[in-house]
Image (tube, rainbow over all chains, first blue to last red; front, side):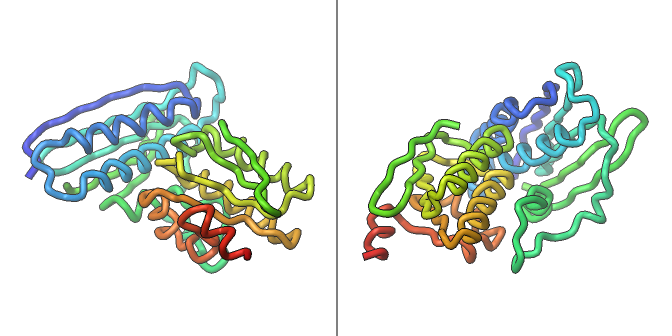
Length: 140
Length: 112
């Protein structure tokens, strides 16, 4: 059981140099989480990876490639549920139409969402008034 | 992307000197490997001992190098993967594509 409540809200420019920073937040959360009985090292890597992939995705989909454009990332943990939201200002994409990687004919792209879907418990992508939100849940 | 290149026997060994390969530096790694292959350096070992994190773009950069080397009758193999890095290759079944060696000694023992 995880009894803590953690809320993190970060806004970064749409630049890949911030991926390390965002990923390391996930690692720190996993390492410091109280009352977590699972594989902490694995959770740390997975949160680092999922945050990195989701933020990379948002940066790639950004329409204004200027330092003024931003990606917002929120992480919320409560009642054993970890919730990550990544907000982008791009044109968006249809999550349901993103295929699984072809393991027999591997391609260089398309593995990021596969990681998110495989390592987390649920993923959704919705359009809001002025942005898109990739929402990821994991039950701890 | 910090790395060193060393020629050992008939292989070019890239020692990655970064803890992390992600979308910030994987493009540079991909270009570096492609440039080597264009120069005829087609037998490549990527030594990943320092790397403790790799994302999908890092896997993609290595896969790109693998395909280009194979197209020129060469090879790109990996060595010294940390367990969590190795698990990313397993999750994407790329461990079935790459030859992955425990260390450089194993690479060259196999060549002998």
